[in-house]
Image 1 (cartoon, rainbow, N blue to C red):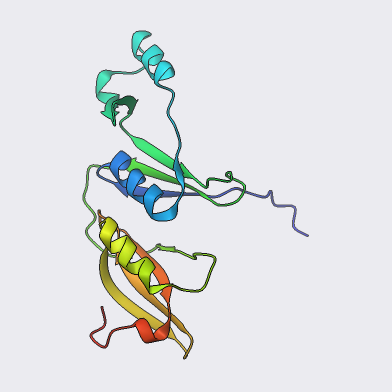
Image 2 (spheres, rainbow, N blue to C red; image 1 turned 30 degrees about the vertical axis):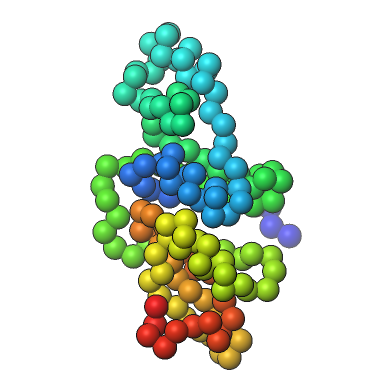
Length: 159
């Protein structure tokens, strides 16, 4: 056994609008957006440790403008934390890392339709052997994700 510490995992997603994208992913995954402590943020502003431009209002609440996080509804020990961080530059190329969603049940093509209805875009598909297939989607800011589907669900056009 290694002497390396056991780490928890946080996946950071660069984006233009972290709070809106965190809301989208929370709906897509069934996870929860971590609440931010509005009283603490106001205290930091009042004491001069933060400035108004470091905050924003999202859904009627004062939040840090720089980011928003998601956690699994059963706790952070069950899954990685997702952190959405505001960056000034837009996404321009394919992600080198993406999320593969594993629904915990047999692949359901209706899940692709549900994510598209939430704002995802279907951009590709793939297979490995006769029984493994997936659809590649992009979230509203263009970040890739893959979802398993039955092979017979794939289209002949490729997306």
